[in-house]
Image 1 (cartoon, rainbow, N blue to C red):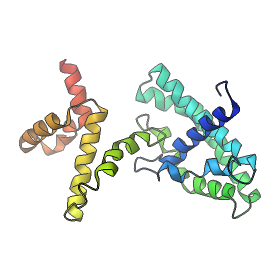
Image 2: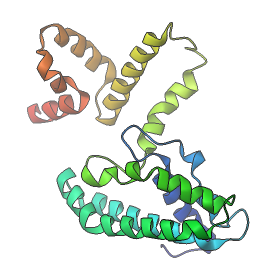
Image 3: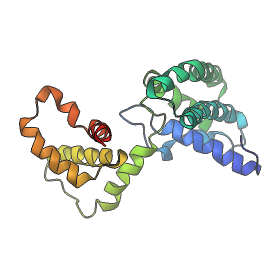
Length: 218
């Protein structure tokens, strides 16, 4: 933990917990505001500090991610690093959760946090097998912020099918922004290419592939 005022350190560790419990699977976990761990640590409630052990495990997992980012590891290198460093931490974390579960009072915030995490465990560790996945949904939440801000202006999608189509467009535009592609130009070129592009190669038109192809040309 970085040096500084103790409360600053606790806020940093709690932030890691928010990222961890926020959304691990590609489908996305519930928003970080539902994260149970900070309230279980005694920062705000009963004074039961056993939850700090969970935050320490989470801190270790995100330390691996920071090091991978600092070193500029590729997706495959990141996957290997997680297998070497994060796997053992996750195994130890789960063992701690299982040992602590019968010790926590059934209706306590600690018990709720432990139960919530164990129920989501398959999604929690899914990122270990794919270096392209990230252990939080911060990027997704930022991408959805525009929808939340503007929903009063486009309250109705017309039908359930219209909502699905809108979600597809939101996803494409958010992916464009993530990869540094101008959305309008991309969508115009996409709609011009779709009629003649082979259906088995539609993945070539995804924003990530589009950006990679543009980088090779330049």
